[in-house]
Length: 276
Ligand code: SAM
Image 1 (cartoon, rainbow, N blue to C red):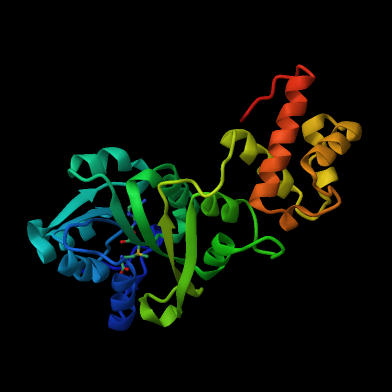
Image 2: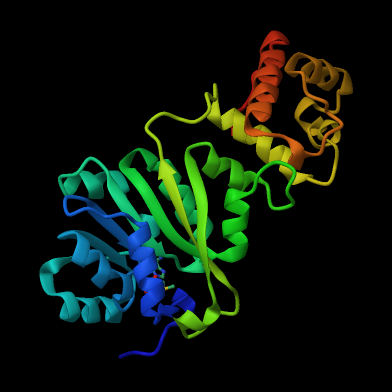
């Protein structure tokens, strides 16, 4: 067995109880397609294969791919690939399924990028059970008013119900990471939870606001109206939002009201907004 590669964030689960809890949380049925990100030495893979014959593993490390092939044979459909290059739509359709269950003890150095890709392909997933750094899990589930609430919370909660299931101490991994981890489940719904008129513009507003999260909204958003406080006052009144609030106190529906009012103000003044 090759030594764990730190560059690929290889921390392998060694605790049978933790493995069992994660597999159970994925609620896999025999006719489900499961996609596992970073199967590593197969700690979770074995449990997943016991539930379903259709498990696809995406593993970047060549030596681990050899190991997984020798351990599971062709029972595991293995892709030696960088998960950030996987087209989930093509993968899942290619396997003959409409939707899949995603499981992954994620390599921490790409957690944010992986979560973004999962959200982009959310229509292809029933749910995702992910092991992430505890601090990231808290940001994902945070609600308005909390210090952890931010762009990541909003991005995930717009399309999914995320829940922290349990924490994992460093000692259940080999080698032990320096931080605690949490296992989260995200249940995706076919219907979006919130009706967002222009998602790109919405995120432009959200990112701008959280870019200066310590300021009041009226100051954090001032750059979007080229410093014209008059315009912001009208937007705040039309959206029925107190712009003295701080960005972390504002809910998703409230950000949507701000986005709509701001966009309407751009449109009425003939300003063409750039969504990016
Ligand atoms: N699932 C295994 C477990 O729980 O024991 C391994 C988890 S380990 C934290 C992360 C795994 O992701 C490693 O096997 C690593 O080689 C793999 N990995 C790292 N970067 C990757 C990438 N960009 N694409 C696919 N797999 C990657």
